[in-house]
Image (cartoon, rainbow, N blue to C red; front, side):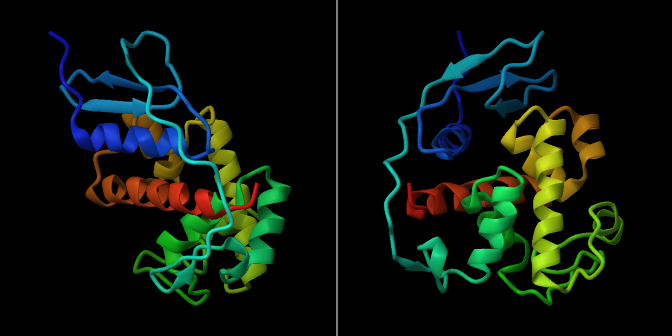
Length: 206
């Protein structure tokens, strides 16, 4: 008998499928340790249960206020800088907004205890690799973070969950695990970003 998919996994599948406003195929596989793995891409050599979530409603110019920020992307902080960086890296602005919201809450002076800094919480090595000279400059920080996220998407074959996990835990940790790493912080981080992305995608203009 096929194993039932937990509600949490089905919920995350719906988030991934709805992220671009269209129906998508989400694949769930069972790891050797019995854990369930979710991806929007099929990988060779794995057995999958295919899930077809309902499509997300068509985007509209929402202007609800939730968590202190307008759901209209153009009314959010740094909207023009984010749109420019998103366009330069062929990314949805809503995805960058979601990442910034979770990473720093739009606080350009935010700094983590690990040394990540600025709106997109760039680590010093990452900032240097992305050509960011001043992590406290919002425009430079957003450009560097967007460029880094694009590289992660390319590295992980456009698997959004893995790219977001790599932004938090590092690409080597994701490559080693072959899935979202079993770190408590990362396990919370990925659904938070994807949930925010789904919600903000509804507010984004067509």
